[in-house]
Image (cartoon, rainbow, N blue to C red; front, top):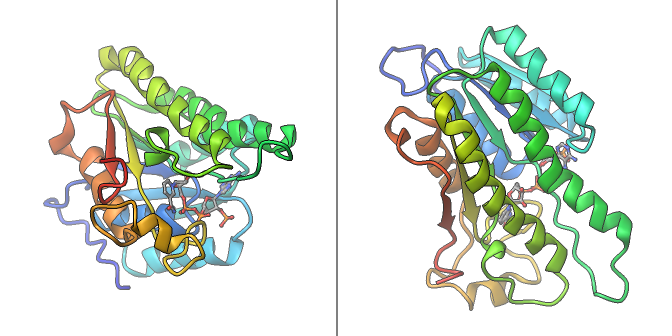
Length: 255
Ligand code: NDP
């Protein structure tokens, strides 16, 4: 897909710098592309997909934008903090943080391991706190933070998803509380909660797809670009009064 990253002053994120975790694939990659299209320089992390990450960065740069792909496991707090600092140094500022990287480890109650419990919390929750703490040190008035939660914070209609649902419900409270910390600094923080979205994590033709669609008012997976659109709004100049909110974009999954 062509990316128009013209530096026109009319672009909503012209002159801004964004940092996106987990930007190599899926929803995160769509967010990286969208923020770049809206005029932002974008640093983003990946854990394993070096080829995809570098191709995405090259794509953005070929279109005249600025991008930086960094290999960081979000569960490594020191590495995540260093990457945020590197992005702010490379691009000269930091305006937007998107906490997107996440894992969906599912399993039955009797066999779910504590290693998977800890991994879920480390990537889906602890890394969000670490990222916000460090990014806020670089942000000024007008800073924007968005976390990708899940509709599963409100509705988990199957067995095996309890720990994932817990991790995404934690983001609801974390977002509310952090809004109070960040408000006096003029920084907003919000939680975008997708429903089924067509990615490697949740393919639109996967074995669970039909039963998911049966629970929805709109019986289809979202496209990652649709989630990126809500993130772009929250990251942009029109969303200055939205903070502490958890916003569903789930085709009525939780309706
Ligand atoms: P994918 O599995 O398709 O992609 C995950 C992305 O996160 C990849 O870029 C991956 O990097 C990166 N990532 C995973 N673990 C880590 C880690 N420890 N450190 C750094 N990066 C990491 O997931 P989705 O795009 O579907 O999901 C993105 C977010 O959206 C997640 O938080 C997920 O919980 C949430 N979500 C997804 C839904 C869906 O239906 N798809 C629904 C609701 C919420 P790499 O390529 O290197 O592995």
